[in-house]
Image (cartoon, rainbow, N blue to C red; front, side, top):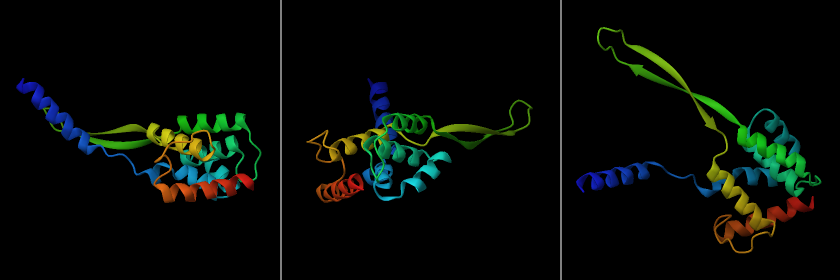
Length: 159
């Protein structure tokens, strides 16, 4: 019983170390898709920027910024955003042991540009803005921010 209690405390402590990103940060690709010029976003997307790739998927899927909807292109941008990975080098020091010299190892850890949480947050807010969802009170932020995003979405859709 004591082991289970200790394990529970350990899990609770670990859970507090993991923080989710603020909604404004998660929805950054959506805000970019609605406000920046598509040519600029597309150039960044072609250079491997995962956030810009997701923004291009939104633009092409919904025909924002004066572009006509292109579901095939949107699907390609989504796939590229999901596959977009970079590597973060981490240094690991191994101390001398059993007469062996100490050494430093470099481990390249893959990091994905778009997290699943970000992907879901953007999709939910886009569904609300495009009218697919009608009840998602906090999908795009608080009430004031949601109204602002709706106004910008309408402008981007009319261009």
